[in-house]
Length: 148
Image 1 (cartoon, rainbow, N blue to C red):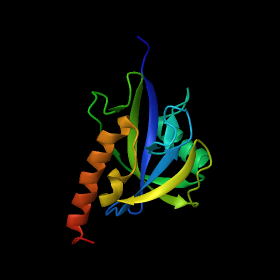
Image 2: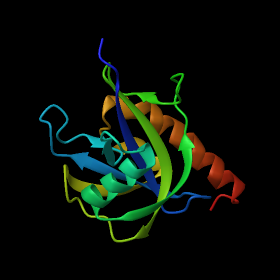
Image 3: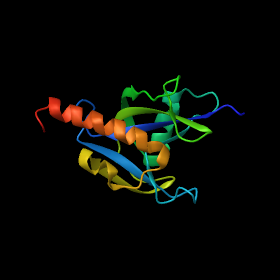
Image 4: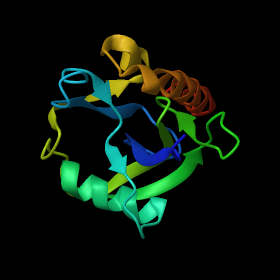
């Protein structure tokens, strides 16, 4: 069996400490995923660190620079999230520090979602467990900020 392919992604939020909204991106390809929503990011190229790959992907896909917050650990032994048999993802909560996000590559629409709206879009199956974990994080942050 081939080694898993590592991808990286960002849960782009409006505030690292007390997020109220998160950015979702709608895929245009491949055909099997077109029209479904995901976290922006992509594959780690040979010789790249996961963090440098994520910064590169955010520039290429959205035209933004971001500050990375904490990594959201997944259930796999290495802390990654299983997406498919072949792909594993590492994900960081991040905040845009430069640029305005635009769907430049692989996406045709971006949408800022509140905690209550996180399940209003058709997420790719592999991202759903992460969305659920992040929703709990949003709600926890909202309760500690006095309900914002």
